[in-house]
Image 1: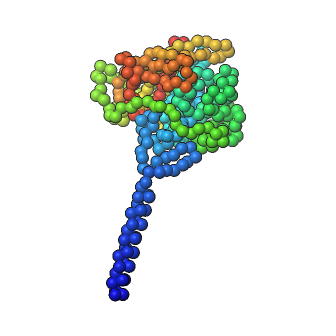
Image 2: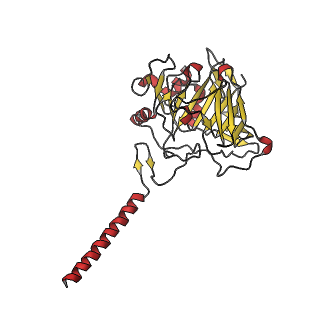
Image 3: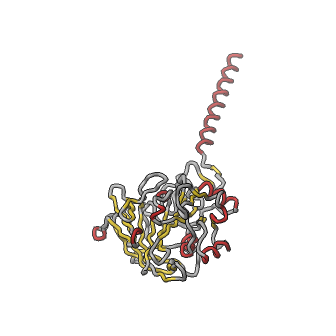
Length: 336
């Protein structure tokens, strides 16, 4: 009888251990959830970026955007290759451009040099539902940003805590930040971290190439040292960026800047007082979309009456373009 009871106990103990192992395995693989203070990340689910269509652990978390210099004195920039989407636009009559870099999926150690807000970038940031970081700005832009037209973080208010200056670099190109500092300040300001950007459609697979539209080089004719060339590599299906004949290198990681999609967005501009111009980024116009080694001739459109409306891209039949998965660069060129 004792032996029988002992056997029963061993069976029960073995079954209990087995149940505990199964429960542990289920718990370990269950779909949750790390709350990182910004959003919920599912540890088993592979999230896709609504911007790039690439795998992105933080795809459900709101992006943070940083204004960056384009001046030759500021090169090479830090963090630029790790942005999900970058907008480049002329900001003064001489043709000097500026970048608006949007970060969501990658986390550079450092971002800079950080520069001022410009009025015409605000509708683009609003359309992406992003948090907009900048170092001061032109008067018209600052008035809107101080009125919280969009969530923003201004280095003029937070220099020394969120933004910092680096020794050995001549002002105004010495301003830098990073995503940890920006995220902490955005949390302090009680900004919502849910990603509300509806996103862009993406191709499931690379389509058959249109042999009549093949092109392996894109020239963007910004003036002087700002002229841009993108070259296509069929092996990687990516475009590499060159400025003034030199490879655009990210100082943060030593990598050349590459994109899966390059959009040339044609629009109009006009001179303003002082040293500024106004660029039309609402309304519609002609666009060339370069991806998969080919060019699509289409158009861009953004609702003029709604600041936070999405910037759309259509082919010549009026269908919204499905982007190739990859980082996106939008080169805005004007008639000036």
